[in-house]
Length: 271
Image (cartoon, rainbow, N blue to C red):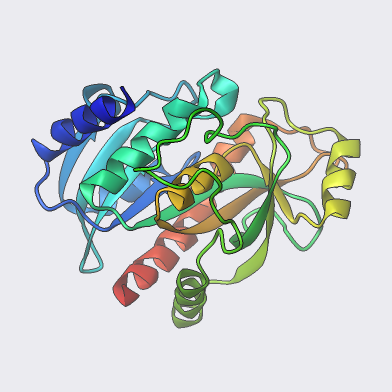
């Protein structure tokens, strides 16, 4: 049944897009406008692709867009789904596996996240070096299809070192300031308590969020290389006295999105 669904998804995209790109970028909360910069775009709504689910979260429009930017042909996922919306692991895994079967080799993730220390101030861009899965959610749980990936995938290099080096080079080229850090994935949907924020920081995490790690796990399982750039949209609870809202997340992501777009353009030129 899994293979049949993957085949249906591949067929739906292939009918609209020939020669699928090798690079896919997933746009997080408030970052969907990057897709508007693509030249000669072809847009396929998630609802028209078997295996793709539509996000219920504001800021995630739900389109797969294929086009060219900085001379590189790419695919962009305009929005993602989250475990806290009630989706099973298969709903997160299937779209990435369809993209892999279409020929994608690299998955570039972006997200909006919270900073766990004063160095990770709102508006900062953070290149992920590693992650901590604190959610007890894993989209690879269940029967394994060996034709997709191994039962026990290696995670010694979740975020590809060569891709991270290209992101850092792009940052130097553009003058965009980036930081490096570890992301802790929590289930949500509530923002974290001050005690939880202190605990995550002691674990060695620099930023916290409710996405990205499931997609990374699925992509690595099926042989894709992964990189991620996070936008810090707020300090974690207890670091700042301001209450946290999703509106603030979207607003800060929108402002910092210009720097992220500049960084990604330079990164894509290197590919």
